[in-house]
Length: 286
Image 1 (tube, rainbow, N blue to C red):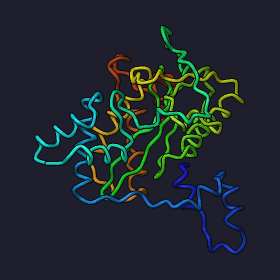
Image 2: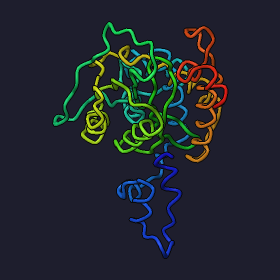
Image 3: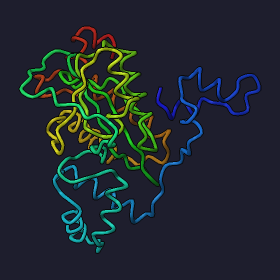
Image 4: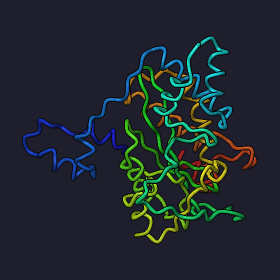
């Protein structure tokens, strides 16, 4: 259950259970409940610009604000670079790597080395990875994180949040660990959500080795970057989600399709679920 879904389960008018007790029962930090949850609103024009930026950035992740500005100008939007920079910052996009602007750890956070160089990872639950991406909606935007098994591309868990705080990343990690065997290595970028103690302590307590992408090296976490491309081109860009509830329902539908129905050429036509669980188990679970 996502942070957003847990929040919707809380009844502030319940006379028997206080909000604090309901949060405890749901495993939800009270700070997450009391934090403002309305997603960010932008003008219709800015949302259209953000849509175009998002699509172009997926095609050319090495584009910075200057090239994005030039692209928008050619599309008939005479915007200046300052506006493009502001929108890209809101979206969490930075040049060189097609990922949210979370690759800057806080100074007090430890950055771990990249452990996957020259490794051959062919078995499930050897390496897991995670990342964050921006998701546009009809009148605003939110953020999506997912935990993926490296070898099978199976999406183990995912969460939606209206902020870039680390609690939704931690929640996704805890959900994946509850449902599946723990991995030997967990790989992320160097973002503050992943370098913070809340996230790294969950891994260290379970004896999981921590691996982090090299600075500016988007290829180090390439499989989850490809997942974002699939999610956006096959779901997000095709539909207009007016609320977080609608988005969560749409993502549930897509990730079920992705895991159990969408075949991968690199797996000779098998689905991520068939690679992760085995063909017979996957058919029973589908």
